[in-house]
Amino acid sequence: MLLSKPLSLLPLALLSLPVVTATLDLDFDYVVVGGGTAGVTIASRLAENKDNRVALVEAGTYYELTWPLGAIPATAFIPVGSDPKGLYPPAEWNFVTEPQPGANDRQIHFTRGKCLGGSSVFNFMIYQRPTVESMQQWADEVDDDSYLWENTLPYYKKTVTFNPPIPAERTPKNATVNYNPDAFLEGDSGEVQVSYATFANSFSTWMQKGMQALGLKEAKDFNSGSLMGHQYCASTIDAKFKTRSSSQTAFLSKPPPSNLKLFTSSLGKRILFDDKKTAVGVEVADPVGFKFNLTAAKEVIVSAGTFQSPQLLMVSGVGPAEQLQEIGVPVVADLPGVGQNMWDHPFVGLTHRVNMETFTRVVNNWLILGLQFLNFAGVQEGPLGSPLSDFLGWEKIPQKLRSLFSTQTQNELDQFPSDWPDVEYISGAGYLGNFSNVFTGQPKDGYQYASILGVHITPTSRGNITLKSADTSDKPLINPNWLSTKTDQEAMVAIFKRLREAFQSKEMQPLSIGEEYYPGLKTSSDEDILQYVKDNVMTLWHPACTCKMGKAEDKTAVVDKEAKVFGVQGLRVVDASAFPFLPPGHPQSTVCK
Image 1 (cartoon, rainbow, N blue to C red):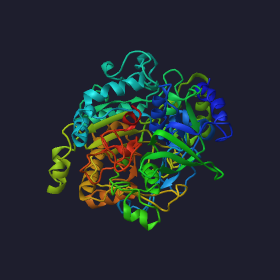
Image 2 (image 1 turned 135 degrees about the horizontal axis):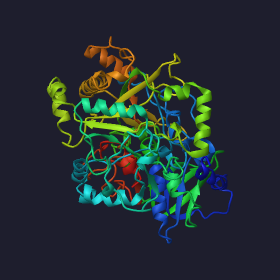
Image 3 (image 1 turned 90 degrees about the vertical axis):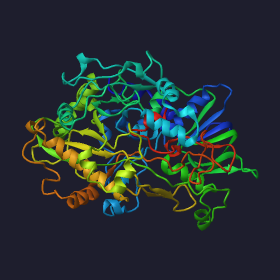
Image 4 (image 1 turned 90 degrees about the horizontal axis):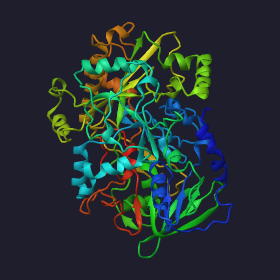
């Protein structure tokens, strides 16, 4: 039956409300703030030791209560539009960026999960790992060989259970998957379910031809330390139920152990320090404003995400002294790097009318959409079981375009390791436009549409997170700063040209109806292309590094190699905000390992 596993979580969800009505011990060994992709994982791992008393604080609740459609893979595109005025589910924070010069002063809605499982409930379920050389760089930057590829691989393997594709169940039959079984452990080895959707988008078979036309070779897989090439990607989809596998369903699908207490619908207000600058607890507020303290005998672990981890540090007195003093926050530790150094992966797309069925037909026809819901409910088949973005390609920008870059751009891109792609190509079986609302924004002219996304994986622009006030109830100011460097602008123009080259290849031409639909061939000069990019650039929702990991002598670093915050005791940051840089690809595998 549809969502039988997610529905089975509803009793747990109901038991999690309200916040602190039961008689609960408010004294713990560890207090984890943020129940997202990282927080659920770290709290659950700590609770495996029965002697540890662990509290997990989450502003949201079980997403089965606030976004039940989130369990269906194909609904991933509904709550992620760029329109700041769009309607988004209560399981999402509804963050909006500051006006972005690199996006022609647009403000962009930036999806982040406000629920147990966090953004693993809203991402497109792509599961892949970083590269060997990017992990070498991580180890070098923090002076710790435990971050080398060969030393982290066992932890990647431990967290997931891999279900190989079953060719007889895959549709269409020519959507053949290549994968490396050695990249995973056998059997039910981990909590996060990884598989290949049984429904593959037919457009992906054409995108594969386009990638081959660009000169990309077929990759063995994307989980063995190499990303270059093209291939179907693995997804965090439960092979049995055909539903999304989030960190919530992975670690909290059963009642939590008695030594793990969940404080849902609870917002972390500030970290409590003693006179020795040791974190001793967290002040928490429930939805009506009642405040209570959770004490931490051993550590406070902040896992509130790239936007709210630095926010919580700063309102607690850990951050740039000048900024804290301006809003009246007493300084506990002057760390200039808190909220700075934000990385992200921006993308742009290109769309053609095509002579095959895509998601345009499904979402534009309520009868078809309803029938597909019934189909998925009954037998877990059909397009709703697709993660939508199921085919990827990766490459360095080729020399024929690289040679046209400025010397500065060439030099900056050459600083990245040799196995670190400049660009990722992602299949998009529908019309994207400026991504304002992919669900309602499909053209209703009777045509079918398909797109390829081009994502910049070697960005040099850095954003920041700053405070609006000293209250975590006020959302922080988010400035991704996309396309603020000449390097990023030149790279995005080149990426667009590669998208156009793929669609115009003789291999893909039989698919297209007429010329390029969006933006159209009139967008031809580098200046026109850059203007188009700025009008349509969107985030791939990979913000990171605002509590950067680094060496003590690095004045921009916030945490050390063990994720311990500099300048205080008993405090760690464990989420993507603590990355020293954003590794190539999709970060969820690294966040939840």
